Each structure stands twice: as C-alpha cells, then as structure tokens.
Amino acid sequence: NAGVMQNPRHLVRRRGQEARLRCSPMKGHSHVYWYRQLPEEGLKFMVYLQKENIIDESGMPKERFSAEFPKEGPSILRIQQVVRGDSAAYFCASSPRHTVETQYFGPGTRLLVL
Amino acid sequence: GQQLNQSPQSMFIQEGEDVSMNCTSSSIFNTWLWYKQDPGEGPVLLIALYKAGELTSNGRLTAQFGITRKDSFLNISASIPSDVGIYFCAGLPFMNRDDKIIFGKGTRLHILP
Image (tube, each protein chain N blue to C red):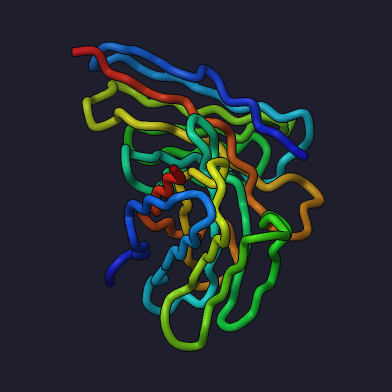
C-alpha cells in the first residue's frame, strides 16, 4: 500500500503566478487534510476535505487559496497570484476516518515564491 | 489562538545519551501526539496519548500525558544517529469540537559525531 503522495515535491513560482499542489491519499482513505509549515515553525491546519466536500476550511486564507477533492483524482490545493509570504512547505495528510491519530502525512511540497 | 510551547528548541547530544523534551500549554488538552519529521519528509506519528497520567512506550521512546493535562513529555533512551530530526508535539485542545490538531514548533535533535 503506497503512502500519501504529493507532487511536485518542489515548486518555484514568481509573484503573481498560480501554484497547484496535488495530493493522492492512501488507498481507502477518503479524508484529506492540508497543512502549511513555515520555516522553523510547526504545521498549521488549513483545510479538511472528504470526497467532493469541503468540511472545514477555517485555517485557509479567504482569498487566493482554494482546495478541492474530486470524486476521481487527487486533492488539489490551489494558490492564485502567489506572494512571497506563501513560500512554505505544504503537507497533506489522509485518513480512513476523521481521527487525529490515523492521519498519515505525505512528504510535502516546498513552494518557493521569487 | 491556542499555542503549544515546546522546549528545548534544539538539542546537541552525544550518541548513546538519553534525551528529554517537553511541551506545555496554557489550556487543557485531551489528546497529546508526538511526531518525528526527517529532513524533506512529512511528520510520522510516534506516540498518541489519551488520558492524564498515561505513560506509553514505543521502543526506546517513552511519552507521558501530564496529570494537569497541560503538558506532555517525550524521552528517548540511548540515542542513535537515526534519531536525528525534528520532534513535534501536537494535541487536541479540550472542548475542541472540530478536531483540529495544534502543533508545537518542534525540538531539533542533533547528534554530535
């Protein structure tokens, strides 16, 4: 059983461009969580999705950020018109149910905005 | 928002030494979690704690849920080179109805050659 997969692992964007981060959950996992980690910081919750539905997006900035988890395919975290402050590592975690100890994290996407 | 204070920020130790780190909060937590993050990777859950006073081991790692429910401790015995990494405490605050994990800022463990 492959683990949580994220791509790309590294992404460089110029200010104003769009960033699309993909997360393929583990097989059988229908719950996906996105977290952001700034340098020297812990992870901060952004959004929780369950197949085709956004359950909790309270940690996600209201503007420029969006997330989806379609019926088929990976979950996507989309950042429009990136700014330097968006530079961070973005991790997704997947889980077979909505419990904290069953969240398995992917290797992350490191976004650098020039 | 709620914060977890993790200490120390960094540790430099010799191989074979025991390691202790802790995590404190100003508010009560009802679940404590300890993760390890290797460079370039995502966090991996080491130990989960659910009750005040609970002491749980995972190999050379032992973690405790503080009896005040406002702190937790992680000990690593007889450290080895592969223990190098960042250790994060995390938890679920009491009365947290939306089950959002709060993370500390991490303890960076370095092993001197």
